[in-house]
Length: 466
Image (cartoon, rainbow, N blue to C red; front, side, top):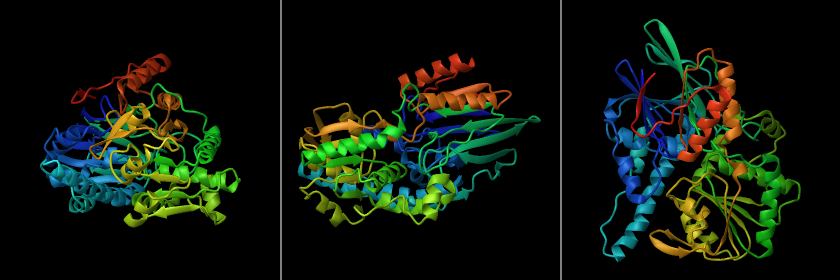
């Protein structure tokens, strides 16, 4: 059995790894690489293997940096099955089509600018038809239900607690009379957060592949984040500004709305309108409502009392383009939550272009920003950024609240590893992926100190026999 790491090796985007077993290639995730435009196209269009050589895909969750290149995989020859959880299957039905729609619209807008400059047009990475075609390959599996990918390779999904439907992929491979268990965390969630259940801990693991987004960082106390959010809102409202929040449509948007709901219920939120301007977030929220099996006890109790955790009287979900454009004409304080979370595509770009130059406004980041994304440049306080190819001076205040992150922090990652070690008799290998080099190195050092296991940080294209 052989593991080869291609995406999210040495960075936090474009997750994609290949498990080679008895001549069959199994793909762990197939995410979009996000970054500079030309590199984005080159990396995503050109797979490091023939797509038709992939037997099956084991998909950990629906976030685009893990699922978003599946339409290209199918378009270029993949004929197999995409196994995932039932909730992830439903979310991908919305997210992959939304990704294609955003790409088509963004390319249309960019090409108008390019035409004025006498530059040739560019094509979208994939189309809505490509996204639709990929959905026919999905097979949704319930948590804990064992399924066979090959005769001697069986799998089960355990709750990763990251977003709705996110899963730890537990792979049991039998060869030469022995069975080896490989566990891939995908993105590992946090403990004691609202809405979703806590991550589960598998047993009898031989090889662990773990993410390291926050491998060397600690999150702020989640109990304090709602008060911090309320203080930020009050400060910006006092200066008659807007709060623009780039947010992932799935997971982060719902968690943010949940917190705003709590603040509103307690009377701690100023009387201003709140807009969720993302058709995908609207659709995803409806999917959330239909997958209560993923919720924790507190959220299920709210629903039993007929309380909507994803809505309150001053909240408006925006679907139409026309209504979205109208938000740009608002002159009174408000909160606008829009996708994408790293500011690489979608309606958030229009809101940033219209609001980043006003010092009264605030851009609030509540999730991780990968290198070479617009979100990262704003978080790094670059004075001038390019939006739709045009330079914009940043006068708005920029803040971040990492406590909203759905990724486990360094302490939670170590706690998870220690629990896995405790529940496994022969954990031999740990591979660290999905992290910037300093974060992966910090996690590797901590694992070695706490467990005595020397974890490996694979580079892109590096392969290992396991």
